[in-house]
Image 1 (cartoon, rainbow, N blue to C red):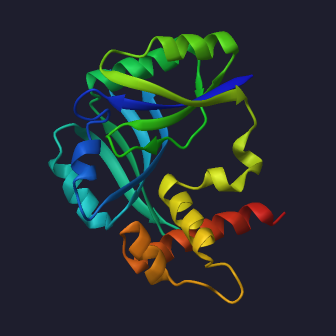
Image 2 (tube, helix red, strand yellow):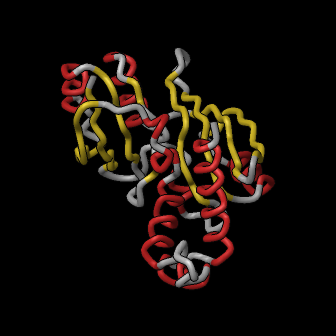
Amino acid sequence: MRYVQFQLVPVSGSLHPLSRILREDDLVTQEAIHHLRLLDDDTVVGLYELEGEVEHLRTTFDEHPAMLDYTVSRSNGAVYAHARTRPTDALRKLLAIQRQYDIVVDGPIEHTSQGGFRITAVGTLDTVRETVSEHPEEVNLVVETTGEYVPRRNRPFVQLTARQREVVLTAVDRGYYENPRQCTYDDIADELDISPETVGEHLRKAEATFVRMAVP
């Protein structure tokens, strides 16, 4: 079984109808997409992990023309939204390709700064090749890595969101986990241009993930 990790970058705009407005909202951070599926009625249902205030997100979703219905809740410090939306043309085509070739997406799907996605797709060698070759013209596809698939279940680091991995790597590099500690939340925050509170939240979430996966 093969996997390919690639970036999908829209030629213009964003892949997902919610991405642009959420990316420009200083009160919201898009962490990851845990599920995304094209329905028979030509709408898209997804499970999204976000960072922000629940009431602010509800107001944003209520005002967005692409949003059809949703629920938003907070669990273990993270905010999750289960939402059904009208897709962009590019997203509709991408999800149709996934369904056609029976490709499995090994989530979570990560957001990129260009309004696109980073995806790990799993399947046979032929289906992986066909999926990569048939991406729609509305997006650029950049292959990052490929090889034999190893399940993520026993690899704790890859279970983190992209932002959590960035904070953890910076913390390790700066000596946060050395004894004695070589840096503070403020030092990590300055390097990443985020708040110390955000650094603390990401590290706590990452540490909780490591502990859950380490304890039998």
